[in-house]
Length: 143
View (spheres, rainbow, N blue to C red):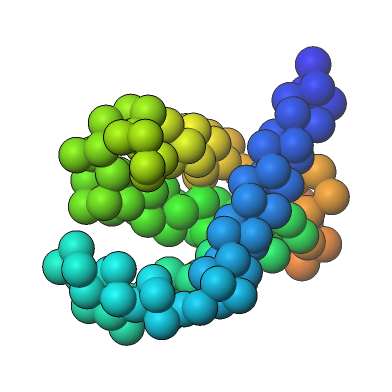
């Protein structure tokens, strides 16, 4: 049963990571200046667009490789809550026909919250770097 959970968690982690990476890449490829202008138009500092797009790129890669999954997922959750309430809530769940609603943001929020709570160990770099310290702390508790 545990193997099924880890495999499922891996799928969620990779899908979220690839999705975030591609969203960040699209912001830069499509002209980050447009995103800066849009941020300004909704009352956010335009420079925040660079922070968000950069986080999407770097955070997406970190999720795919399993580096800091819980921490990145917490930040993704916060980003999604901000996106929903600041940019998408007024559009409704499915949007207004011209702009998407917050349905994808809710799905990303749910995945990120799951990963923040449960972590993801299968094929994760975190396991390579922190496996020994976890085993040592378990051994110390058993002694």
